[in-house]
Image 1 (tube, rainbow, N blue to C red):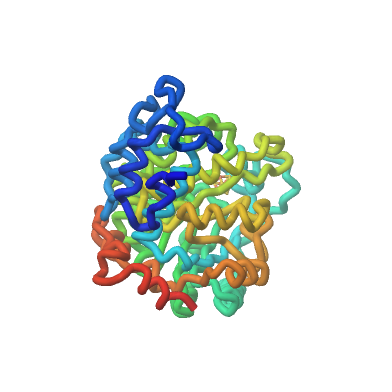
Image 2: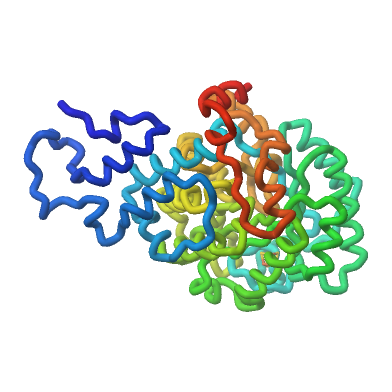
Length: 416
Ligand code: SF4
């Protein structure tokens, strides 16, 4: 029985995907030589949801682009999942080493008591979640936690504080800067999430050596008001601009399972894909419903929606690190691996992730060992992204296969 070009192709063969778009879809068990009724089948070209050129262009891209339309992203999002993940894996292997996963540890440096009304959050003072608000932790305790994280393989240490913004928080900012300096002195990447910040605060953090600032847009612009009412989507984008303008790398993604529709996943990706430069990091969180919050009884987001979002993000944001964030602990190992194959290449690991459970280092080490993964070194995330953050504009990252060599050879030599 003849094989389709897709089955015959190697991972790097873009021509196979082009050939695939000319094939008629058949039920799994159809003998390939049986005549197919064109009226009952779809081709990628004929599908109202799929533009062949959009997918092909994304698969063949050698650089990120910021002129995506929602329709284009939607057409990619709606490609059959088997083809979508294959296409995403192809792009992933061009721009990243698929065996390298960044391990990050996230510590809450100020818990609870936040004035915002994010409907998913245990730390909002508006909801009775049983969480006790605390004062900011000491610089020493943060650096001790960072040392432990580094010893266990984490190369990035993230610090989160439950604040709306940094207005009037001079002492707090001074302490955060000391934490950032201490983490950087450990030769780790330092990331903070402190709510909204202005241009001057962003510059202070940059001067302290901050690597990245996390500020998620959470969901699409349309769905956002049904999740948060105390600050606007545009205020979020203003903070992201301040971070970018200061030369700090941007970490901005979303949460799936907030009662949104698939088109909101497209909208989320569209928002960050059309910023002047793509975020260097795109976290994908799956809502962990917290009792007492408005979304406390929400249904869990389906795995295929998570996978589809990750694969689409990989195709649309080829150089970005895609971060499998909250909710990973609810996924079996095989599901996590599908996410890694489709383009996710960072995880949060350690004892806890803010207020929710987290996969531990030992568990992750065992999984990495079994599947041939290895922790990413901090310098590996810098290639091509440093300039982008510094210049505050989109810049082409050199894809792996364009760096002057054989992709497979580089991957082999990079593996432990
Ligand atoms: S701003 Fe952050 S800490 Fe405050 S309620 Fe929203 S998600 Fe929670």
